[in-house]
Length: 277
View 1 (spheres, rainbow, N blue to C red):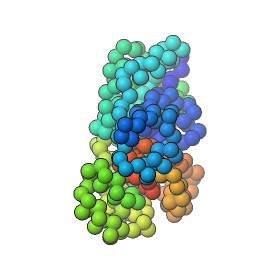
View 2: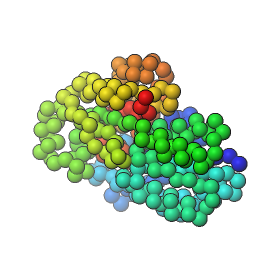
View 3: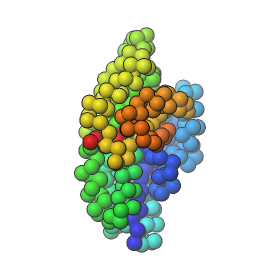
View 4: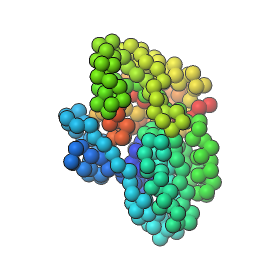
C-alpha cells in the first residue's frame, strides 16, 4: 500500500512535484462565467483574464463529493492518503475534505494554515516523507507539527486588486500609487496580513530579504519555493539573482502562484516561502 498525496488547486509546487500529486480543483467565477481551476482555465489564461476583466473573480471550494471521488479511487487501489489544503481560515476547502474523509479509513486531512507556495512547501515536504517510506498517519502528524515553521512573504506590485476586493479604500490605493507603496504581505496564524510597506520596487525587494533574515533564515535542507503572480517571471528572476545568498546559492524552484492568491494581489508580485531554521 502506497501513500497518495492529495491537494487542492491552490497549492503551488515545483513542476516536477506536481506530476506526483492528485489535485482537487476549486472553481473560479468571473461574473457569470465559471471555470474549473487548472482544468478549464490555466494560470496564464486566468492572469490574462484578470487584467482585462471589469469584475474581480471569486472562487468556490470543492464539494465533499469532489474529495470523496478521489478518496474512493485511492481506496480502490489500496492506497492511504494525506490531504493538504489551503488554510481553513481562508477557505472552506479543509472542511469539505474533512466531511468526505469521515467515510474512509486511512485518509488524513491536514490544514496547511497557509496558501500558494506556503502550502506548497508543506506539500513538497510531504513528498519527501513519502520517499523516506513514512506511513500516512505519521506523515500527517509530522506535517501538523512542521507547518508552524513555514514562512511566506510576498511583495506586491500594485494596490489595485486590494482596492477592488474592498480590502483598502480607493483613497488609500490612490495615495499608495502616488507614493509607489509596495506592501509586503505574509501569512500568519492562517490569515493574510501586511508585514511591511516599502517605497518602490527596489526597496520592496530589500524589505523582503530583510524579513526573511529576520526570521532566522531559510532551512535549505527542507523545501523552499519562489513564486510570482501574473504572466511575467522577470521580477522574480531579478529577486532570485539578488537574494541567492539567502538559500546559499542552491537551485531554487520557481512557480507561478495560484489564481486564488492572484485574485487579491494582482500581477507582478514576488514571493518566497520556506521552513525557518
